[in-house]
Image 1 (cartoon, rainbow, N blue to C red):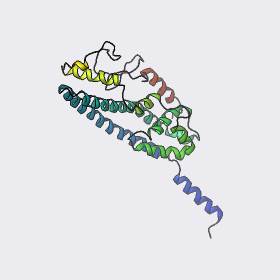
Image 2: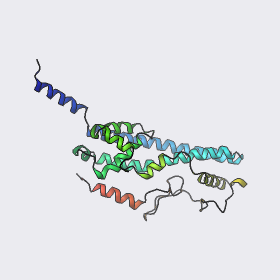
Image 3: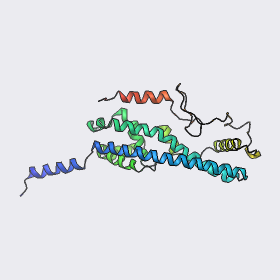
Image 4: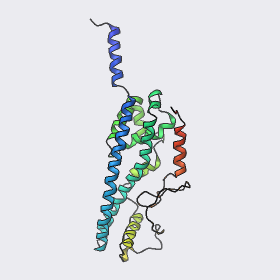
Length: 248
């Protein structure tokens, strides 16, 4: 008959086998990064295709169809923009997984990255986020996961939150984008002429890289400045502080 001490030893081994494993979290972060790259490229291809279709609709004066396509374009662009921030968080978690493993509670300096990824597991099409969520639940428990999903600590990145919870883009922005398409195609459509009262009548410029002076970044594809986009210096300061936290 197996003794009590042997039973306890066996139970402990089973618990350890089913518990948090830092190598799994690291692998799931890597897989999520790969998946995001594929999805991002697919979305960019879709956006380019839809822009051509929307331009064709405009040339045929099918304004409503063009507007529907432009709304979808913007929604896809919002996701791509959010991906850029999420990618940084995944790389940070992967680089600091040893800190997560060594500390009982979630390190304060990693809470924004962790809580943002946890929230994304309920809103994003990247299925690997679910695996990361399961890993972190083994580490921190169901209570922490629920609090993170509810954003009780206000740790979720507000820019990611705004980009992934937007249902319909601002109609004024949609119209401005359609005006840009019409202008690029040399189409004169009275319904899309520049309105002096339009809030989006700034010069139409192609997308460009993030500024280096810490100003608000333009969106990677649309070229428009998102309301809550963090500046380059802001992000650099954020990740620099995290880099100093528990360096190997």
